[in-house]
Image (cartoon, rainbow, N blue to C red; front, top):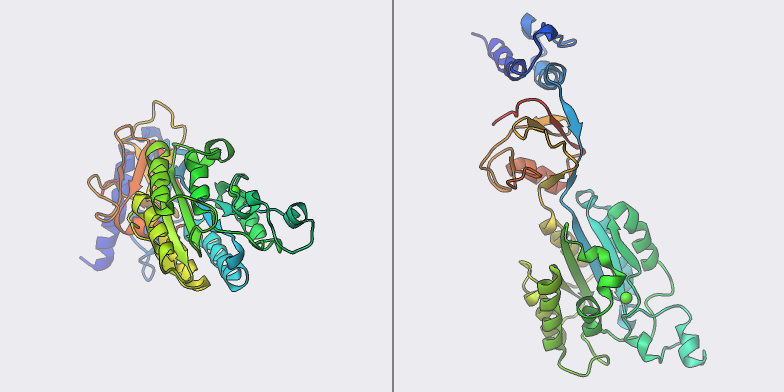
Length: 374
Ligand SMILES: [Ca+2]
């Protein structure tokens, strides 16, 4: 038996699955321009592999498409915009955020921006009679009570506003401090849940990512390390929001202790702060953090109650993925039901790697034909 002959036998298998649920009146099946009964075409052994499975399944079974969405990940970036961020640090942070928001691997993640202290254009005049290019109002030097500059939303909607804030020449403002404690208090016991309800949603994995180039000086009278640890732990315990800390630029002394207090209580694998010396390093740190947050889980939307979970198939870029019941994100090669209610599916092994790598364009699903097993 030639290799070509073997290949033809393999390609018939999907059609056999389909026959089990076909209406006899549908036969014989029209496979379009490729006909397995004629064998394969010399010199073109790969054509059947791409065309027959999808075409035959669609035509024999009464398949119905349904929608599904990537498990939601929301990230609120708490960015230090104190005086010391002026210049190369701010431009480096701008470039890093732009790279994060343009990365195709994160296109369906949700991002928001809460830069602190708040400050606002005109505050020099209001606080200082315009005599000096400096703020002297306490609520601006250390203020964090304004709502986030950009509410958390899916990347393509929030990214333009985040980039616009970074490119606003009014920021960062002079004579501002680094109110780390105030900023975490905002999300713990402050107006966070009212002002920024999205990050408190319980339908998703939610994160605060703190980026600071300094320690909390001039804004908090108590022990900032202890206060940061307490606020971060409360935010996790009460609201389920995890926290991660990045030290930008030089991170010696008290600053390291403060950022480690956040990281240690934040509930993620990043139990100490990440150090980023400059813009490119910050971009790399943000990428590694966001990569760690991507799941390979997808949630089915509004599936009919009568839909049979044993007659479902998933496709990555149009190619069917087999079911692999005992697989995990890092083992096996297929998909499995992540929950007993059959509302969440998880892709495994190399399929998961492709999703994490951002190389998959479309993920689709159908009910109505027997599940293709590994
Ligand atoms: Ca704010």
